[in-house]
Image 1 (cartoon, rainbow, N blue to C red):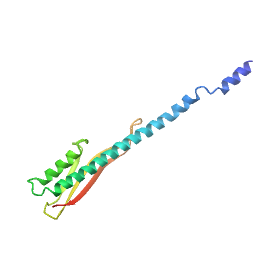
Image 2: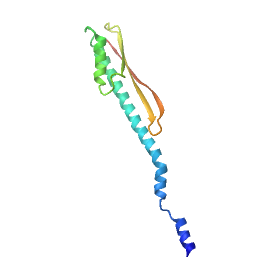
Image 3: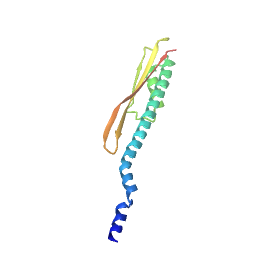
Length: 135
């Protein structure tokens, strides 16, 4: 009877699911955090892109203002109000003569890392540039 009891305990699958879950959970967590960080970075990129469009449009119609560069930069910053204003870099390039081009460029830093390990996978700047003709 001892042999039968021993065979039953060897074939027992109790705890197998918990062991498999413990092995797979870190991989799922890394994948989930990676997807979230990519989503945040893409949202920030879309915000920067939209902000440069707003700034270029403001610059294109503001040549008669005392400070058209300042007006364009203010338009970019107000359009990107969800981003950290200290990290947002804005450049307005134009001579503001009628018919010339104005280019507004904005850059914002990003970083994608593995939070469980603390390893930075990639980082850099999200940059967008928009050019319009000055009216």
